[in-house]
Length: 138
Image 1 (cartoon, rainbow, N blue to C red):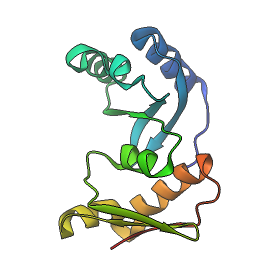
Image 2 (image 1 turned 135 degrees about the vertical axis):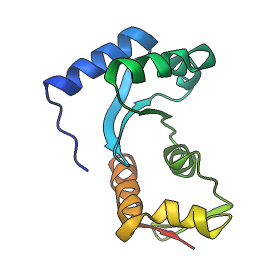
Image 3 (image 1 turned 120 degrees about the vertical axis):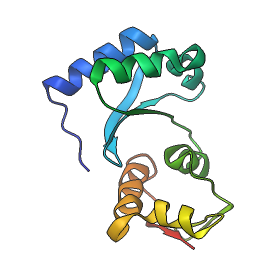
């Protein structure tokens, strides 16, 4: 899930910032979608009125993209990262975050095939919160 900033990605970042007028915090692929992370409080500006910026970017790049908002609080950051999946509760003990989903389907989507989604989530969260050891879903 590592992200190489090649020429194509650098161009996409430039286009993103030109269209949204929002500086980008980070860009990476998450669950096979190009994901743009903006600073806290900049999400709505990045999306645009009625998601016009998002739709314009998807059309330009000819792929689905996600825009997520960074948060200094790890629990809120994790919730933003896995949205629109709902979390019933989230606890943390000794660097292990445990997520509880509302139903089996949601839990399955959080985990992913062979725990791929869960491991990807951990990698992104650990970049910003290095004390995280593991994320579990119950």
